[in-house]
Length: 247
Image (cartoon, rainbow, N blue to C red; front, side, top):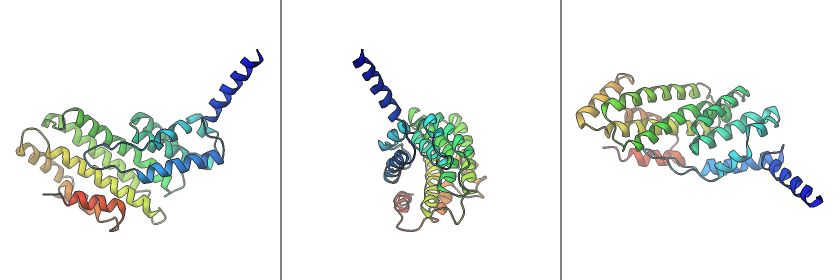
């Protein structure tokens, strides 16, 4: 009987330890997230495998566990959870975590505020690319109409993130924002040029897009975004290589 009670107590203790406890464990989760975040590379036209560290972050940062943190820690915790859920394909959860994080009042212009505001747009892009791949990477003109609408909405969501960026926002965060806006535009262009029906269908889609970008095509807009990131930055290196393939 005593052995049974001891085993039950041990199981409860292990379950409790699977969630974060204040200060020391929170720092550990931050370290795990930063390692995953800074080694993560998402390229255009495909969804790269997410570093395993993101899954560890999600398991440590349950909503109940986040609620136990100090109020000032909660926006960071929600940001880490939201980004990790986006990268591991838990799209609805990522949007919910983003909303919870913004409701926790992150510091204005901080990494937390910017990334939490970006997550819905990043989710939209991931959902579009996932569906495009499932459709054989060749949408018809009829299927593409919904994609165009979704990308315009996603870019509007990114504009909301840009509005909370200022000179106090860390440069790495500003570059992260620029990279993902560039990547989203490049993904959109990739879908357009792969439309079934030939060049005429793609040209019609491009013409429609130009009316929203003052006569510029998606790659022109993407190139302007690329140039806002300093040369030599790791994300700029990726962009330079991709833009070098432009016909």
